[in-house]
Length: 149
Image 1 (cartoon, rainbow, N blue to C red):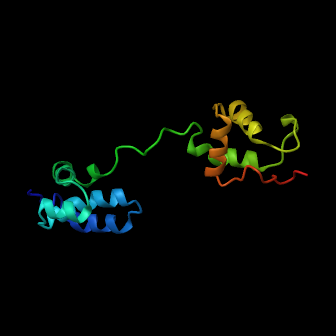
Image 2 (tube, rainbow, N blue to C red):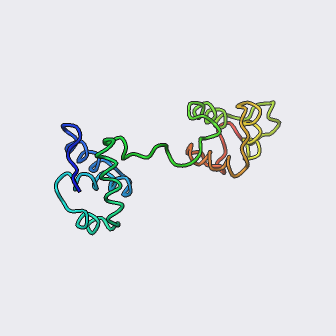
Image 3 (cartoon, rainbow, N blue to C red):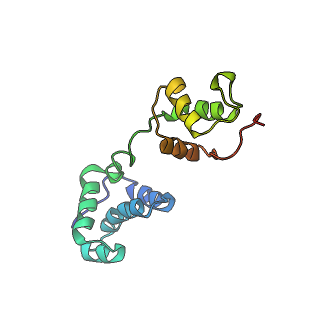
């Protein structure tokens, strides 16, 4: 297996990516071509990283043929969020404030968040989806909101 540094500085860049990467899976994707560039044999890399030789070859050749960017996943895992990230702060502010008179309740609950998302933000969430969204936005679904008595 012959893999050379594709661009000057790639070895240093791969080392930096390995050092800063939180995910073990992605870190190993960077390690495979780095070890190959350094002249390690396919079998040794496979043994060190606990994968098959074909996996080592696949990622080393992906780097060789397409560069470091080819070692990253094509898109983030999971589907696109229903509520766009740029509207998260707006929704969080709406839920964090005291209920409005038009809400018709004195305390906002999950079903109210479903209604608000549908009517005010134009997206349809299930009740479980709303609870997941509230969790991602660091909002406790059981905590009273400010101004609620």
